[in-house]
Image 1 (spheres, helix red, strand yellow):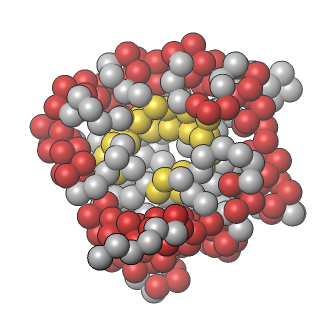
Image 2: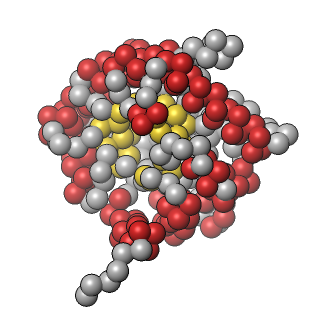
Length: 266
């Protein structure tokens, strides 16, 4: 999955693709460099980012979705949004997948397991990616709370009538977690895989990798990206979300061959 941010303030590439033309060119480059899916986001989710209204998000997002769909008719498009009122029109403009960084929990009634986003996905018959996230990165028992919150998201998807094969999960590296939690959820990713849903993993350029490597520039963390995403693939992740597919494509190709046990034919 290749990242296409049409935001002025994303941590890695904010403001680079803020015109429809630039966004389409970025999408083309992502696909040419190995992306199977283009993930388009119009609201920054970096720590400290100012939320935008659904209206502003749609103004940024919908023309880009429409143009990318026209330019790349065979490429699946996911929309990175946690607002059901944005996801619906985006699917209407040609997007295929909803990528929800709040795991369907935003504006949800946990008591009744009622999630507007999951209901929207079920109504549209759109696959959904439910990412783990929380407001405060404080845990008394990390794995118990993490898996419990993932189970709540999955229960809301079931309640909405989403078939299991349309539901993906994401551990939320960098979201509602301290660096030690990000490393722990990566180390134990097989525990999320064991829930039985395909896992999307995305640590691309994130600050935890910068802390480990001692690098402040988000775009200077290539070695960390490779290590984290190869570990995730080995643990069973079905897809990785990255900013520069060309820089990691060959590593993943070899990792897939090793995992599949392919015989070398020369």
